[in-house]
Image (tube, rainbow, N blue to C red; front, side):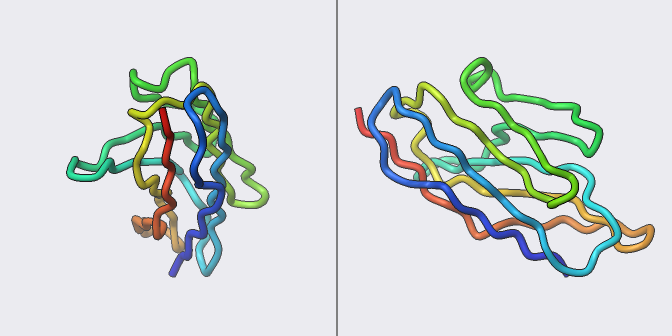
Length: 119
């Protein structure tokens, strides 16, 4: 079982920055992919950014150049640095990970953290 604890959301003005953190804890052999998704009110959940244990990253076109995903493998923690925030970034942000217990993989979601950008 893996627990994902997110922090760093909040209310900011357009143009501001926020940094989200998500720490994985529990009983697992390793953590492979870690990612951030977001879900605006009334819309589908979408991928924001992902990062593998080797550091390969993927970004949604809407956040390229503004958001940076990173991770600390020793702490099993993933970060999302969000700069130049705008109203369209308002959403609940969810941490996601694929963790291995021996050779079997499991998918886990965090509880979500609200990011609200006022224009």
